[in-house]
Length: 114
Length: 425
Image 1 (cartoon, each protein chain N blue to C red):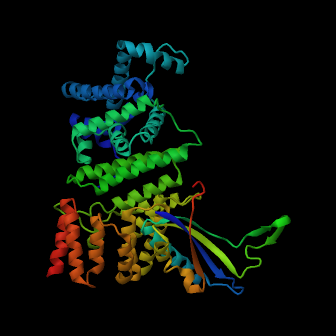
Image 2 (image 1 turned 135 degrees about the vertical axis):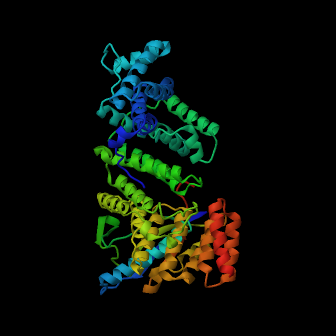
Image 3 (image 1 turned 120 degrees about the vertical axis):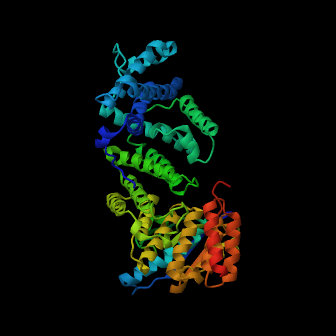
Protein backbone atom coordinates (compact mmCIF):
# COMPACT_ATOMS: atom_id res chain seq x y z
CA UNK A 1 0.00 0.00 0.00
CA UNK A 2 1.06 3.56 -0.69
CA UNK A 3 0.70 6.57 1.53
CA UNK A 4 -1.40 9.59 0.68
CA UNK A 5 -1.53 12.99 2.32
CA UNK A 6 -4.95 14.55 2.82
CA UNK A 7 -4.92 18.32 3.17
CA UNK A 8 -8.03 19.94 4.63
CA UNK A 9 -8.72 23.45 3.40
CA UNK A 10 -11.53 25.83 4.08
CA UNK A 11 -12.17 29.53 3.54
CA UNK A 12 -11.34 31.93 6.28
CA UNK A 13 -14.47 32.90 8.09
CA UNK A 14 -13.89 36.10 10.03
CA UNK A 15 -17.11 35.79 11.98
CA UNK A 16 -16.44 32.17 12.89
CA UNK A 17 -17.50 31.64 16.49
CA UNK A 18 -19.20 28.31 17.12
CA UNK A 19 -21.03 27.50 20.35
CA UNK A 20 -19.40 24.93 22.64
CA UNK A 21 -22.06 22.40 21.54
CA UNK A 22 -21.27 23.04 17.89
CA UNK A 23 -17.55 22.62 18.58
CA UNK A 24 -18.18 19.38 20.44
CA UNK A 25 -20.39 18.09 17.63
CA UNK A 26 -17.77 19.06 15.11
CA UNK A 27 -15.03 17.20 17.01
CA UNK A 28 -17.25 14.12 17.18
CA UNK A 29 -17.90 14.29 13.42
CA UNK A 30 -14.17 14.41 12.76
CA UNK A 31 -13.46 11.59 15.21
CA UNK A 32 -16.20 9.43 13.69
CA UNK A 33 -14.84 10.03 10.20
CA UNK A 34 -11.20 9.40 11.15
CA UNK A 35 -12.24 6.46 13.33
CA UNK A 36 -13.85 4.96 10.23
CA UNK A 37 -10.55 5.16 8.33
CA UNK A 38 -8.59 3.86 11.31
CA UNK A 39 -11.07 0.96 11.66
CA UNK A 40 -9.96 -0.17 8.20
CA UNK A 41 -6.37 -0.07 9.39
CA UNK A 42 -5.62 2.67 6.87
CA UNK A 43 -4.63 5.57 9.12
CA UNK A 44 -0.93 6.40 9.14
CA UNK A 45 -0.89 9.59 11.15
CA UNK A 46 -2.11 13.12 11.23
CA UNK A 47 -2.28 16.39 13.02
CA UNK A 48 -4.65 19.24 13.56
CA UNK A 49 -3.19 22.68 13.04
CA UNK A 50 -3.80 25.51 15.46
CA UNK A 51 -4.29 29.13 14.45
CA UNK A 52 -0.85 30.08 15.68
CA UNK A 53 1.59 30.41 12.81
CA UNK A 54 3.85 32.68 10.80
CA UNK A 55 5.21 32.63 7.27
CA UNK A 56 8.85 33.18 6.39
CA UNK A 57 9.49 34.87 3.05
CA UNK A 58 12.69 35.71 1.17
CA UNK A 59 14.94 38.38 2.69
CA UNK A 60 13.88 37.37 6.17
CA UNK A 61 10.42 38.88 5.88
CA UNK A 62 8.08 37.34 8.39
CA UNK A 63 4.33 37.54 7.83
CA UNK A 64 2.03 37.05 10.78
CA UNK A 65 -0.54 34.32 10.62
CA UNK A 66 -0.56 31.19 8.56
CA UNK A 67 -3.01 32.72 6.07
CA UNK A 68 -1.49 36.09 5.26
CA UNK A 69 -2.44 36.45 1.61
CA UNK A 70 -4.47 33.39 0.80
CA UNK A 71 -8.19 32.92 0.82
CA UNK A 72 -8.10 29.40 2.17
CA UNK A 73 -6.52 28.12 5.35
CA UNK A 74 -5.14 24.63 5.92
CA UNK A 75 -6.85 23.24 8.99
CA UNK A 76 -4.96 20.00 9.24
CA UNK A 77 -3.53 17.01 7.44
CA UNK A 78 -3.65 13.27 7.79
CA UNK A 79 -1.71 10.49 6.11
CA UNK A 80 -3.66 7.44 4.98
CA UNK A 81 -2.77 4.12 3.39
CA UNK A 82 -4.39 3.07 0.11
CA UNK A 83 -3.50 1.03 -2.95
CA UNK A 84 -4.09 3.89 -5.38
CA UNK A 85 -5.44 7.43 -5.65
CA UNK A 86 -9.00 6.24 -6.34
CA UNK A 87 -9.06 4.26 -3.11
CA UNK A 88 -7.63 7.24 -1.25
CA UNK A 89 -10.37 9.45 -2.73
CA UNK A 90 -12.95 6.93 -1.48
CA UNK A 91 -11.53 7.33 2.03
CA UNK A 92 -11.92 11.10 1.75
CA UNK A 93 -15.69 10.75 1.23
CA UNK A 94 -17.69 11.85 4.22
CA UNK A 95 -14.97 14.17 5.53
CA UNK A 96 -16.73 16.72 7.77
CA UNK A 97 -14.98 19.64 6.08
CA UNK A 98 -17.06 19.01 2.94
CA UNK A 99 -20.25 19.99 4.77
CA UNK A 100 -18.64 23.28 5.88
CA UNK A 101 -17.71 24.48 2.39
CA UNK A 102 -14.17 23.19 2.57
CA UNK A 103 -12.29 20.66 0.47
CA UNK A 104 -9.88 17.75 0.78
CA UNK A 105 -6.82 17.65 -1.42
CA UNK A 106 -5.36 14.16 -1.77
CA UNK A 107 -1.72 13.78 -2.79
CA UNK A 108 0.39 10.68 -3.09
CA UNK A 109 3.54 10.72 -0.99
CA UNK A 110 6.97 9.85 -2.38
CA UNK A 111 9.26 8.73 0.44
CA UNK A 112 12.31 10.98 0.70
CA UNK A 113 14.85 8.18 0.34
CA UNK A 114 13.51 6.67 -2.90
CA UNK B 1 -15.27 -14.50 44.21
CA UNK B 2 -12.23 -12.53 43.15
CA UNK B 3 -10.34 -10.96 45.98
CA UNK B 4 -7.11 -9.07 45.82
CA UNK B 5 -6.18 -9.09 49.45
CA UNK B 6 -5.72 -12.65 50.60
CA UNK B 7 -6.14 -13.06 54.29
CA UNK B 8 -3.77 -15.36 56.10
CA UNK B 9 -5.42 -15.14 59.48
CA UNK B 10 -7.18 -18.38 58.73
CA UNK B 11 -3.88 -20.21 58.53
CA UNK B 12 -4.37 -21.77 61.97
CA UNK B 13 -7.39 -23.64 60.75
CA UNK B 14 -5.69 -25.14 57.73
CA UNK B 15 -4.24 -28.61 57.60
CA UNK B 16 -0.66 -28.91 56.41
CA UNK B 17 -1.55 -29.61 52.77
CA UNK B 18 -3.80 -26.59 52.48
CA UNK B 19 -1.22 -24.49 54.27
CA UNK B 20 1.54 -25.53 51.86
CA UNK B 21 -0.70 -24.73 48.90
CA UNK B 22 -1.38 -21.31 50.40
CA UNK B 23 2.26 -20.63 51.18
CA UNK B 24 3.27 -21.88 47.77
CA UNK B 25 1.05 -19.21 46.23
CA UNK B 26 2.53 -16.42 48.34
CA UNK B 27 6.09 -17.46 49.27
CA UNK B 28 7.30 -19.37 46.21
CA UNK B 29 7.58 -16.21 44.14
CA UNK B 30 9.41 -14.39 46.92
CA UNK B 31 12.01 -17.07 47.56
CA UNK B 32 12.64 -17.78 43.89
CA UNK B 33 12.99 -14.08 43.04
CA UNK B 34 15.54 -13.54 45.77
CA UNK B 35 17.51 -16.61 44.63
CA UNK B 36 17.32 -15.65 40.93
CA UNK B 37 18.62 -12.26 41.89
CA UNK B 38 21.40 -13.88 43.93
CA UNK B 39 22.55 -16.27 41.19
CA UNK B 40 21.70 -14.19 38.11
CA UNK B 41 20.61 -15.72 34.78
CA UNK B 42 24.21 -16.64 33.86
CA UNK B 43 25.38 -20.22 34.56
CA UNK B 44 21.76 -21.48 34.63
CA UNK B 45 21.11 -19.43 37.76
CA UNK B 46 17.35 -19.39 37.21
CA UNK B 47 17.22 -23.20 37.03
CA UNK B 48 19.28 -23.47 40.22
CA UNK B 49 16.91 -21.04 41.93
CA UNK B 50 13.94 -23.09 40.72
CA UNK B 51 15.48 -26.34 42.00
CA UNK B 52 16.28 -24.95 45.43
CA UNK B 53 12.82 -23.40 45.81
CA UNK B 54 11.09 -26.59 44.68
CA UNK B 55 13.23 -28.66 47.06
CA UNK B 56 12.33 -26.34 49.91
CA UNK B 57 8.61 -26.85 49.39
CA UNK B 58 9.09 -30.57 48.88
CA UNK B 59 10.88 -30.83 52.20
CA UNK B 60 8.13 -28.80 53.85
CA UNK B 61 5.42 -31.17 52.66
CA UNK B 62 7.44 -34.20 53.81
CA UNK B 63 8.46 -32.85 57.18
CA UNK B 64 5.26 -31.05 58.16
CA UNK B 65 3.21 -34.14 57.38
CA UNK B 66 5.28 -36.16 59.83
CA UNK B 67 6.23 -33.69 62.53
CA UNK B 68 3.42 -31.20 62.32
CA UNK B 69 3.37 -27.59 61.24
CA UNK B 70 6.19 -25.44 62.66
CA UNK B 71 5.37 -22.39 64.74
CA UNK B 72 6.32 -19.92 62.03
CA UNK B 73 5.92 -21.72 58.69
CA UNK B 74 7.20 -18.82 56.56
CA UNK B 75 10.34 -18.41 58.64
CA UNK B 76 10.83 -22.19 58.40
CA UNK B 77 10.68 -22.00 54.59
CA UNK B 78 13.12 -19.09 54.48
CA UNK B 79 15.57 -20.85 56.79
CA UNK B 80 15.48 -24.03 54.70
CA UNK B 81 15.90 -22.07 51.46
CA UNK B 82 18.90 -20.27 52.97
CA UNK B 83 20.53 -23.51 54.11
CA UNK B 84 19.90 -25.23 50.81
CA UNK B 85 21.46 -22.30 48.98
CA UNK B 86 24.53 -22.38 51.21
CA UNK B 87 24.84 -26.15 50.77
CA UNK B 88 24.56 -25.74 47.06
CA UNK B 89 27.24 -23.09 46.96
CA UNK B 90 29.58 -25.28 49.02
CA UNK B 91 28.92 -28.37 46.93
CA UNK B 92 29.19 -26.99 43.51
CA UNK B 93 32.64 -26.50 42.14
CA UNK B 94 31.76 -24.49 39.06
CA UNK B 95 29.71 -22.16 41.14
CA UNK B 96 32.54 -21.84 43.56
CA UNK B 97 34.97 -20.94 40.85
CA UNK B 98 32.80 -18.72 38.72
CA UNK B 99 29.83 -17.34 40.58
CA UNK B 100 31.17 -16.91 44.10
CA UNK B 101 34.05 -14.61 43.10
CA UNK B 102 31.59 -12.27 41.41
CA UNK B 103 29.16 -12.48 44.33
CA UNK B 104 31.95 -11.69 46.75
CA UNK B 105 33.00 -8.86 44.54
CA UNK B 106 29.47 -7.45 44.68
CA UNK B 107 29.25 -7.87 48.40
CA UNK B 108 32.52 -6.13 49.20
CA UNK B 109 34.48 -9.30 49.76
CA UNK B 110 32.41 -10.56 52.68
CA UNK B 111 33.38 -14.04 53.73
CA UNK B 112 29.97 -15.65 53.81
CA UNK B 113 27.38 -15.40 51.03
CA UNK B 114 24.22 -14.00 52.57
CA UNK B 115 20.80 -15.05 51.36
CA UNK B 116 18.90 -11.89 52.12
CA UNK B 117 15.24 -12.71 52.73
CA UNK B 118 14.35 -9.36 54.24
CA UNK B 119 11.11 -7.69 53.15
CA UNK B 120 13.01 -5.05 51.26
CA UNK B 121 15.15 -7.46 49.31
CA UNK B 122 12.13 -9.66 48.57
CA UNK B 123 10.24 -6.69 47.12
CA UNK B 124 13.24 -5.40 45.18
CA UNK B 125 14.05 -8.83 43.79
CA UNK B 126 10.45 -9.42 42.72
CA UNK B 127 10.28 -6.06 40.98
CA UNK B 128 13.59 -6.68 39.23
CA UNK B 129 12.46 -10.16 38.19
CA UNK B 130 9.31 -8.69 36.64
CA UNK B 131 11.49 -6.44 34.50
CA UNK B 132 13.89 -9.29 33.70
CA UNK B 133 11.16 -11.64 32.54
CA UNK B 134 9.22 -9.02 30.63
CA UNK B 135 12.16 -8.33 28.39
CA UNK B 136 11.54 -7.76 24.67
CA UNK B 137 14.36 -10.18 23.73
CA UNK B 138 12.06 -13.06 24.79
CA UNK B 139 8.95 -13.76 22.65
CA UNK B 140 5.77 -12.55 24.35
CA UNK B 141 4.31 -16.02 24.81
CA UNK B 142 7.46 -17.13 26.59
CA UNK B 143 7.37 -14.00 28.76
CA UNK B 144 3.88 -14.94 29.92
CA UNK B 145 4.94 -18.54 30.53
CA UNK B 146 8.01 -17.53 32.51
CA UNK B 147 5.99 -14.97 34.47
CA UNK B 148 3.47 -17.66 35.40
CA UNK B 149 6.25 -20.04 36.42
CA UNK B 150 8.50 -17.72 38.38
CA UNK B 151 6.39 -14.74 39.40
CA UNK B 152 3.20 -16.69 40.07
CA UNK B 153 4.49 -20.17 41.01
CA UNK B 154 2.35 -22.01 38.44
CA UNK B 155 3.15 -25.62 37.61
CA UNK B 156 4.17 -26.58 34.06
CA UNK B 157 0.93 -28.55 33.71
CA UNK B 158 -1.22 -25.55 34.65
CA UNK B 159 0.64 -23.34 32.17
CA UNK B 160 0.19 -25.97 29.45
CA UNK B 161 -3.54 -26.11 30.21
CA UNK B 162 -3.81 -22.33 30.07
CA UNK B 163 -2.17 -22.23 26.65
CA UNK B 164 -4.08 -25.32 25.49
CA UNK B 165 -0.87 -27.16 24.74
CA UNK B 166 1.26 -29.91 26.30
CA UNK B 167 3.96 -29.94 28.96
CA UNK B 168 6.81 -30.60 26.52
CA UNK B 169 5.98 -27.48 24.50
CA UNK B 170 5.93 -25.33 27.63
CA UNK B 171 9.14 -26.86 28.98
CA UNK B 172 10.89 -26.17 25.69
CA UNK B 173 9.51 -22.64 25.54
CA UNK B 174 10.65 -21.81 29.07
CA UNK B 175 14.04 -23.45 28.53
CA UNK B 176 14.67 -21.37 25.41
CA UNK B 177 13.61 -18.20 27.21
CA UNK B 178 16.02 -18.86 30.05
CA UNK B 179 18.76 -19.62 27.51
CA UNK B 180 18.07 -16.26 25.87
CA UNK B 181 18.43 -14.44 29.17
CA UNK B 182 21.62 -16.38 29.86
CA UNK B 183 23.31 -15.87 26.49
CA UNK B 184 22.29 -12.23 26.22
CA UNK B 185 23.83 -11.79 29.66
CA UNK B 186 20.76 -9.98 30.98
CA UNK B 187 21.32 -8.71 34.48
CA UNK B 188 18.61 -8.84 37.10
CA UNK B 189 18.43 -5.21 37.98
CA UNK B 190 16.13 -2.25 38.05
CA UNK B 191 15.86 -0.24 34.80
CA UNK B 192 17.40 3.21 34.86
CA UNK B 193 15.24 6.30 35.31
CA UNK B 194 15.50 6.96 31.56
CA UNK B 195 14.44 3.46 30.56
CA UNK B 196 11.71 2.89 33.08
CA UNK B 197 8.79 4.11 30.98
CA UNK B 198 9.60 2.04 27.90
CA UNK B 199 10.47 -1.01 30.00
CA UNK B 200 7.28 -0.57 31.99
CA UNK B 201 5.31 -0.66 28.74
CA UNK B 202 6.66 -4.13 27.95
CA UNK B 203 5.77 -5.27 31.46
CA UNK B 204 2.23 -3.90 31.09
CA UNK B 205 1.81 -5.55 27.69
CA UNK B 206 2.69 -8.90 29.25
CA UNK B 207 0.30 -8.36 32.17
CA UNK B 208 -2.42 -7.24 29.75
CA UNK B 209 -1.94 -10.37 27.64
CA UNK B 210 -1.82 -12.58 30.74
CA UNK B 211 -5.14 -11.09 31.82
CA UNK B 212 -6.64 -11.56 28.35
CA UNK B 213 -5.37 -15.12 28.26
CA UNK B 214 -7.52 -15.75 31.30
CA UNK B 215 -10.46 -13.61 30.27
CA UNK B 216 -10.81 -14.96 26.73
CA UNK B 217 -9.17 -18.36 27.13
CA UNK B 218 -10.89 -21.30 25.48
CA UNK B 219 -10.08 -23.66 28.31
CA UNK B 220 -13.20 -24.93 30.05
CA UNK B 221 -11.60 -24.74 33.46
CA UNK B 222 -13.22 -21.58 34.77
CA UNK B 223 -11.15 -21.78 37.94
CA UNK B 224 -7.88 -21.65 36.01
CA UNK B 225 -9.10 -18.75 33.91
CA UNK B 226 -9.95 -16.70 37.00
CA UNK B 227 -6.61 -17.62 38.48
CA UNK B 228 -4.79 -16.18 35.41
CA UNK B 229 -6.74 -12.92 35.65
CA UNK B 230 -6.13 -12.72 39.37
CA UNK B 231 -2.39 -13.22 38.90
CA UNK B 232 -2.24 -10.45 36.30
CA UNK B 233 -4.02 -8.21 38.81
CA UNK B 234 -1.72 -9.25 41.66
CA UNK B 235 1.37 -8.40 39.61
CA UNK B 236 -0.19 -5.13 38.51
CA UNK B 237 -1.07 -4.33 42.13
CA UNK B 238 2.53 -5.05 43.06
CA UNK B 239 3.62 -2.33 40.59
CA UNK B 240 1.11 0.09 42.12
CA UNK B 241 2.37 -0.59 45.63
CA UNK B 242 5.85 0.45 44.62
CA UNK B 243 6.47 4.14 44.33
CA UNK B 244 8.80 3.98 41.32
CA UNK B 245 6.37 1.95 39.23
CA UNK B 246 3.13 3.53 40.45
CA UNK B 247 2.55 5.49 37.23
CA UNK B 248 -0.78 6.67 35.76
CA UNK B 249 -0.56 4.08 32.97
CA UNK B 250 -0.18 1.27 35.55
CA UNK B 251 -3.32 2.48 37.32
CA UNK B 252 -5.15 2.63 33.99
CA UNK B 253 -4.42 -1.04 33.33
CA UNK B 254 -5.47 -1.93 36.88
CA UNK B 255 -8.74 -0.06 36.40
CA UNK B 256 -9.40 -1.90 33.16
CA UNK B 257 -8.77 -5.28 34.79
CA UNK B 258 -11.04 -4.46 37.75
CA UNK B 259 -13.93 -3.43 35.49
CA UNK B 260 -13.58 -6.52 33.32
CA UNK B 261 -13.32 -8.97 36.19
CA UNK B 262 -16.38 -7.41 37.84
CA UNK B 263 -18.42 -9.31 35.24
CA UNK B 264 -16.75 -12.65 35.80
CA UNK B 265 -19.72 -14.28 37.52
CA UNK B 266 -22.19 -12.90 34.99
CA UNK B 267 -20.41 -13.86 31.78
CA UNK B 268 -20.75 -17.64 32.06
CA UNK B 269 -23.85 -19.62 32.99
CA UNK B 270 -24.10 -22.65 35.27
CA UNK B 271 -22.84 -25.05 32.63
CA UNK B 272 -19.91 -22.85 31.61
CA UNK B 273 -21.39 -21.38 28.42
CA UNK B 274 -20.66 -17.73 27.73
CA UNK B 275 -23.40 -15.17 28.35
CA UNK B 276 -23.17 -12.09 26.13
CA UNK B 277 -23.05 -8.62 27.65
CA UNK B 278 -26.62 -7.73 26.64
CA UNK B 279 -28.05 -10.83 28.29
CA UNK B 280 -26.06 -10.69 31.53
CA UNK B 281 -27.78 -10.52 34.91
CA UNK B 282 -26.49 -7.15 36.10
CA UNK B 283 -27.04 -8.18 39.71
CA UNK B 284 -24.16 -10.59 39.32
CA UNK B 285 -21.74 -7.77 38.53
CA UNK B 286 -19.28 -7.34 41.38
CA UNK B 287 -19.85 -3.89 42.89
CA UNK B 288 -16.63 -4.01 44.89
CA UNK B 289 -14.52 -4.50 41.78
CA UNK B 290 -16.44 -1.79 39.90
CA UNK B 291 -15.68 0.58 42.79
CA UNK B 292 -12.00 -0.42 42.61
CA UNK B 293 -12.08 0.16 38.85
CA UNK B 294 -13.41 3.68 39.47
CA UNK B 295 -10.74 4.31 42.07
CA UNK B 296 -7.85 3.30 39.80
CA UNK B 297 -9.39 5.16 36.85
CA UNK B 298 -9.27 8.37 38.91
CA UNK B 299 -5.68 7.55 39.95
CA UNK B 300 -4.77 7.10 36.29
CA UNK B 301 -6.04 10.55 35.31
CA UNK B 302 -2.72 12.31 35.85
CA UNK B 303 0.14 13.28 33.61
CA UNK B 304 -0.04 14.04 29.92
CA UNK B 305 -0.08 10.66 28.26
CA UNK B 306 -3.35 9.12 27.18
CA UNK B 307 -2.49 5.45 26.72
CA UNK B 308 -4.55 2.70 25.15
CA UNK B 309 -5.12 1.36 28.68
CA UNK B 310 -6.70 4.69 29.65
CA UNK B 311 -9.07 4.45 26.70
CA UNK B 312 -9.87 0.80 27.30
CA UNK B 313 -10.49 1.52 30.99
CA UNK B 314 -12.77 4.35 29.92
CA UNK B 315 -14.71 1.99 27.65
CA UNK B 316 -14.87 -0.62 30.42
CA UNK B 317 -16.11 2.07 32.83
CA UNK B 318 -19.07 2.81 30.56
CA UNK B 319 -19.74 -0.89 30.13
CA UNK B 320 -19.89 -1.24 33.90
CA UNK B 321 -22.55 1.43 34.12
CA UNK B 322 -26.00 -0.10 34.46
CA UNK B 323 -27.69 2.91 32.95
CA UNK B 324 -28.62 2.65 29.27
CA UNK B 325 -28.67 5.99 27.47
CA UNK B 326 -27.43 7.42 24.17
CA UNK B 327 -24.61 9.32 25.88
CA UNK B 328 -23.15 6.05 27.18
CA UNK B 329 -22.71 4.66 23.67
CA UNK B 330 -21.57 8.01 22.26
CA UNK B 331 -18.77 8.00 24.86
CA UNK B 332 -17.87 4.41 24.07
CA UNK B 333 -17.76 5.18 20.34
CA UNK B 334 -15.50 8.19 20.85
CA UNK B 335 -13.12 6.17 23.01
CA UNK B 336 -12.99 3.45 20.34
CA UNK B 337 -12.25 6.10 17.69
CA UNK B 338 -9.34 7.39 19.75
CA UNK B 339 -8.14 3.89 20.52
CA UNK B 340 -8.01 3.05 16.81
CA UNK B 341 -6.04 6.21 16.12
CA UNK B 342 -3.45 5.07 18.69
CA UNK B 343 -3.35 1.44 17.63
CA UNK B 344 -5.31 -0.55 15.07
CA UNK B 345 -6.54 -4.02 15.89
CA UNK B 346 -9.28 -6.01 14.14
CA UNK B 347 -11.18 -6.59 17.39
CA UNK B 348 -11.18 -2.86 18.19
CA UNK B 349 -12.43 -2.14 14.67
CA UNK B 350 -15.30 -4.61 15.17
CA UNK B 351 -16.19 -3.26 18.61
CA UNK B 352 -16.10 0.27 17.29
CA UNK B 353 -18.58 -0.66 14.56
CA UNK B 354 -20.88 -2.25 17.15
CA UNK B 355 -20.79 1.00 19.15
CA UNK B 356 -21.43 2.96 15.93
CA UNK B 357 -24.60 0.92 15.36
CA UNK B 358 -25.77 1.81 18.88
CA UNK B 359 -25.22 5.52 18.19
CA UNK B 360 -26.08 5.98 14.51
CA UNK B 361 -28.18 2.95 13.76
CA UNK B 362 -27.57 -0.34 12.02
CA UNK B 363 -27.92 1.03 8.43
CA UNK B 364 -24.96 3.36 8.79
CA UNK B 365 -22.96 0.73 10.69
CA UNK B 366 -23.51 -1.79 7.86
CA UNK B 367 -21.89 0.60 5.35
CA UNK B 368 -18.90 1.03 7.67
CA UNK B 369 -18.74 -2.69 8.49
CA UNK B 370 -18.54 -3.63 4.82
CA UNK B 371 -15.39 -1.53 4.48
CA UNK B 372 -13.59 -3.47 7.23
CA UNK B 373 -13.01 -6.52 5.06
CA UNK B 374 -11.94 -8.84 7.87
CA UNK B 375 -12.85 -11.95 5.91
CA UNK B 376 -10.84 -14.45 7.95
CA UNK B 377 -12.28 -13.33 11.29
CA UNK B 378 -15.42 -15.15 12.42
CA UNK B 379 -16.39 -12.26 14.71
CA UNK B 380 -16.62 -10.11 11.57
CA UNK B 381 -19.37 -12.33 10.21
CA UNK B 382 -21.09 -12.43 13.61
CA UNK B 383 -21.10 -8.64 13.58
CA UNK B 384 -22.53 -8.53 10.05
CA UNK B 385 -25.15 -11.06 11.17
CA UNK B 386 -26.07 -8.89 14.15
CA UNK B 387 -26.24 -5.71 12.04
CA UNK B 388 -28.54 -7.34 9.47
CA UNK B 389 -30.84 -8.88 12.08
CA UNK B 390 -34.32 -7.27 11.76
CA UNK B 391 -33.16 -5.42 8.65
CA UNK B 392 -32.57 -8.35 6.29
CA UNK B 393 -32.91 -11.63 8.17
CA UNK B 394 -32.05 -13.77 5.15
CA UNK B 395 -28.69 -12.03 4.92
CA UNK B 396 -28.31 -12.17 8.70
CA UNK B 397 -28.76 -15.95 8.65
CA UNK B 398 -26.19 -16.41 5.89
CA UNK B 399 -23.65 -14.30 7.79
CA UNK B 400 -24.21 -16.19 11.03
CA UNK B 401 -23.79 -19.45 9.11
CA UNK B 402 -20.39 -18.35 7.77
CA UNK B 403 -19.42 -17.24 11.27
CA UNK B 404 -20.40 -20.62 12.67
CA UNK B 405 -18.28 -22.44 10.09
CA UNK B 406 -15.27 -20.27 10.93
CA UNK B 407 -15.70 -20.29 14.72
CA UNK B 408 -13.08 -22.34 16.52
CA UNK B 409 -14.30 -22.87 20.07
CA UNK B 410 -17.33 -24.97 21.05
CA UNK B 411 -18.65 -22.05 23.08
CA UNK B 412 -18.65 -19.70 20.09
CA UNK B 413 -20.26 -22.35 17.92
CA UNK B 414 -23.08 -23.00 20.40
CA UNK B 415 -23.74 -19.27 20.80
CA UNK B 416 -24.06 -18.88 17.05
CA UNK B 417 -26.28 -21.95 16.90
CA UNK B 418 -28.67 -20.29 19.32
CA UNK B 419 -28.78 -17.12 17.21
CA UNK B 420 -29.51 -19.12 14.06
CA UNK B 421 -32.31 -21.03 15.78
CA UNK B 422 -33.92 -17.79 16.97
CA UNK B 423 -33.70 -16.26 13.51
CA UNK B 424 -35.17 -19.29 11.74
CA UNK B 425 -38.22 -19.43 14.03
